[in-house]
Length: 147
Image 1 (cartoon, rainbow, N blue to C red):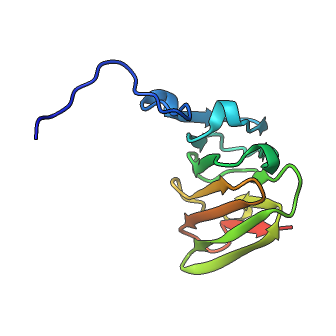
Image 2 (image 1 turned 180 degrees about the horizontal axis):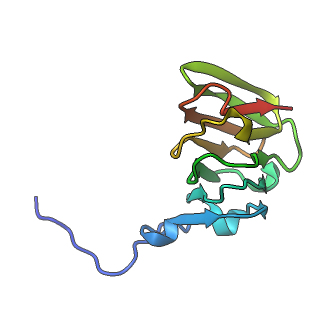
Image 3 (image 1 turned 90 degrees about the horizontal axis):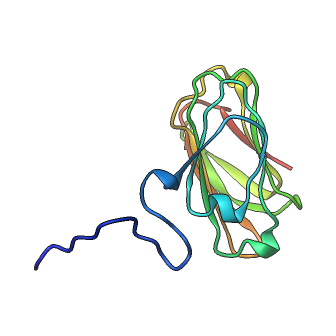
């Protein structure tokens, strides 16, 4: 089979572009938008965390985000909050413990855990009704889910 070669960016019908534009670095409070962030790796880069707000579920069917901690030992929590509340479902693994998201509205990368690990992450996918969460964290209580 012959190898295929392309020049320039490869763009999908949903707007994903492979390469550096598929990573977004955030260092301050941000309203996460479908247009600016769909399908991208979102690196939370400031040691002092911030509040991130997800877009409305009704207009987010098919949207995917991955949030990854890119700064060690945050001094303030990073929070990811649902715009409407009580629509985050699924579970994550935190230090080999399953953490359930059952009608939750906030995911917190907890600075008080004092052992956050660069690379701890959560991903969220929306079906137009719920945000479905998956994720991993190294240290107990470093990511919590509430609401």
